[in-house]
Length: 324
Ligand code: ATP
Image 1: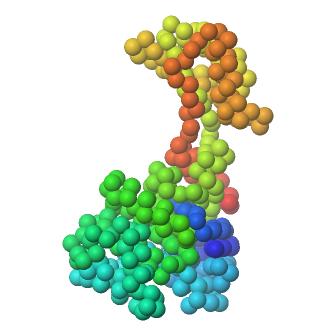
Image 2: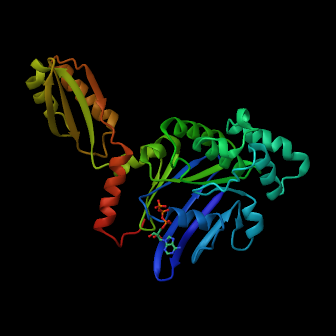
Image 3: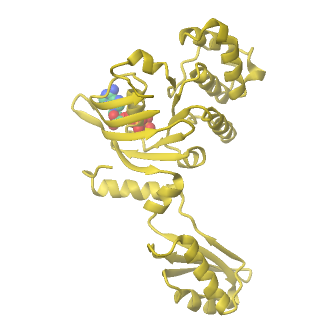
């Protein structure tokens, strides 16, 4: 669906995007994740044809946006950071205007509007003026407008910006339903949001791709360490510590404080090629079982995407010349 190859953007002498490459297909929600100034909006503007890349190529369903700007732009729905809405219009009035703008054939317009209203759960406010809607609803109107002409690629720049937690959850559900027959590319600097919404995450910083994969793959590849949490009766701390320490793959044990007769041990593991995290968890469980300790909790302490993200940013800052 979308193929981005080695794109660069210079603003005058400033090299804002430095060789970004990735591909994405229909049915996928792909998140561009990066700190402020990483180059997300610049990348998105090149993909949506706002301006061309200084170098590199972008194609949508095989159409080059440079060679076929009109045809390729019809395949894109774009929701910029602040949705271009007309506050004095009603929701349906605005969608009718957008349907004409995107040359949706008049016979298909009513159906297209109904579908967009339903996908974004806007049926109840269809006759309201946009100025009377909350920020979350206005954002959904922007999404409905972007999805109206059934684009194969939906590009959303910071769609959760300024929304409260409930609105963010609703936005996530809307995005997932839109991804049923489109490829959704969204940008965000909200890690938890990306982790919950996206099938795939492309981490960018200083105009470069630092990592690309599912949240689980990124955690596995880039997590600084993995660990297991064990909660045991305080009286069994010594026996458990000795047993766990002798388990292959265990690097260190950090005991937590004792609370109401229970204690949590955080077991740090060495990453090994031979044993998966589940194998390591099973080995620790066996060691405890062998000394008769029954833990109340035994669970992987999965590193959040946040740790992965910070470790990636730190390593890119240490080697600023490093490319993807
Ligand atoms: P944010 O999350 O803050 O929106 P971003 O990841 O979207 O950041 P961009 O807006 O793409 O980042 O900006 C990338 C870099 O390019 C930044 O250093 C920014 O200052 C610079 N930049 C963006 N637009 C221009 C411009 N028109 N002229 C010069 N520099 C620009």
